[in-house]
Image 1 (spheres, rainbow, N blue to C red):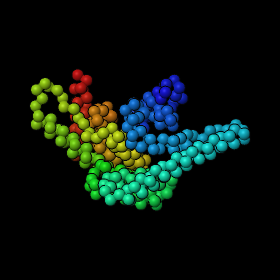
Image 2: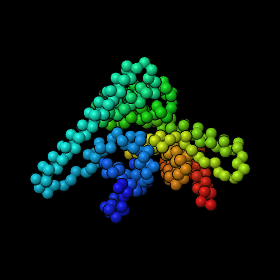
Image 3: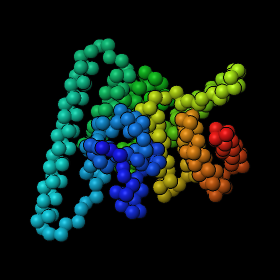
Image 4: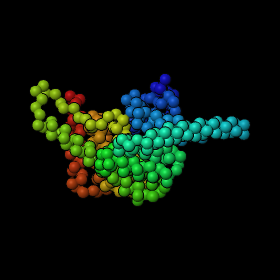
Length: 311
């Protein structure tokens, strides 16, 4: 059973969805440390990344217990060591699978750029899990190269490589490099979502719906891609907001990108939440009047559509 019972949650503790940060109602039954608001988001996360790292999250997200005696401490230490051995075993197993996949790709002369990209991305993530940053950078650089060949340098499918590479630089405290890559990722997603939104808007204007039905918005992404987009953009937003040398313009840019994403996902409450945050920040930091007006128009549009849907 992976449903969360509210009375079992310690008072004052807020459990949030891994994907959208909404109040969680479910927990992964395997690792018991990852929470979701719905089965849809749980399946999306499982298919995108969680399946690969499920058990690795347990020691990372479990707080160290308080031991009353040396005997309890020794017992706890033994359990921790057993978990670490299991974690290493899973990494070794993943390494074996990926080594076999890499050998298959090397032997084949017909493997696509996309396949090579996926292989190197997974190898990069494996190296990140092993904290081998140099090898991780090598594989992620290859991921970006092959993905660029397959889809283009500005494609959302290439942005994942930039994002993971940025995470490495951020962890190594190379903040300028990380910032450059985070900015590129944000711009790629903003451009994609904005273009998609404009296409749908034009379609609504040009077509006449005789039945008076509203045109449904759509991201053009599958569940796993939507989950990845939310994860990437919320991670960048959190970093933007936590960095000592904050750049409000960049933060507002990510917030506006999240507004478009949630609007296209037909989640008006989330879209309005991020639009409100963007508008308040723009006012507080005295950004340009043009910027404030643009956000205000977006906020009014979302509020109007939400009110219309309720009616």
